[in-house]
Image 1 (tube, rainbow, N blue to C red):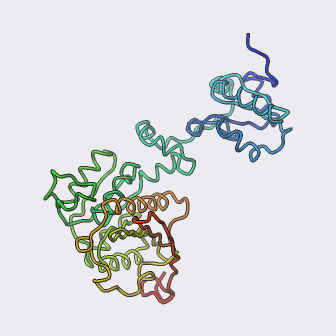
Image 2 (image 1 turned 90 degrees about the horizontal axis):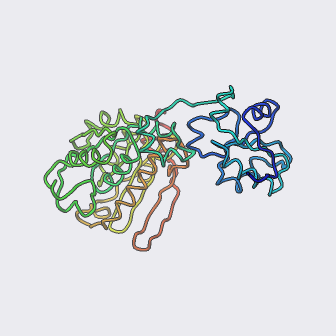
Image 3 (image 1 turned 45 degrees about the vertical axis):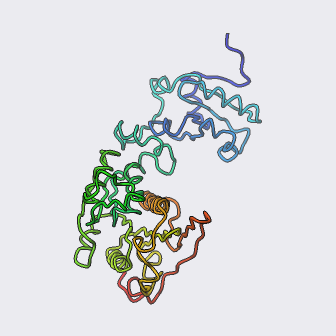
Length: 364
């Protein structure tokens, strides 16, 4: 025989009457269960979060609370905890939600934005409240262009593809060289001499067949830059020279495309995000081009193999925030990483009113 509880357990029929009379409904299931359907007007408060969030959700200890889960087990434990912690008017639904619905109880089933296969693949991301099915759908619909399939582009592409970015464009006219393999993790030894975009497409296709990889086997220049970036939502700058960075910056400002910038040098990396007319652009940060001797390429100065991995992943993280519209991007902030001391630091970047690309005299 089931032991008596210090609170009332009710059937689905009784719960319907309590809900109609204004009782507050607490749903102690998990976010993923809630996403599949829930009682309209209920408050989601997963059992694991009960102790940390109940004071915020239900500050009045005398409020009438109807607690439910899927079949009545978790609601029983939640109700017992509430009574033990001073709540005086708690009722637990001992029936299943199927019974609630069979008796005509209100139910809200959101539109399924993902296929069952997508829900399985991206389940760990969908669980995050700031993402959910709607956010994952945004990622699947997003188009991200990577300028360069090398050191920075490799880790960014891997995680963007794995996380479900639907279309990844790759701009690179180079071929895989043995010296690339120390840091350019998209490529493998058996692909030396293969075009980097082809090698990248093979890797990303094996990782996530659902991601469409578009090869742009060409070098970014003044004649093609606007054509290349026009159809993409976010641009990831993995270039290694100032001429291309200025060229990309000016076109992105004209077309209002956000650019996630990364650069690396020996043990040092930098990452920032440029959102046209909402913050500074690359010319605001570097109004004049430094001389070549102050910014030598990796094949001259060298680079720690893991460094582009760190910077490229930070770039991918910026892309996620831009696509999802959540969090705070690095717009107006330059994040610097010193691998030698494992130190992150940050400086502010201000938009220059006199900037020839995005200043006050330009068309917005």
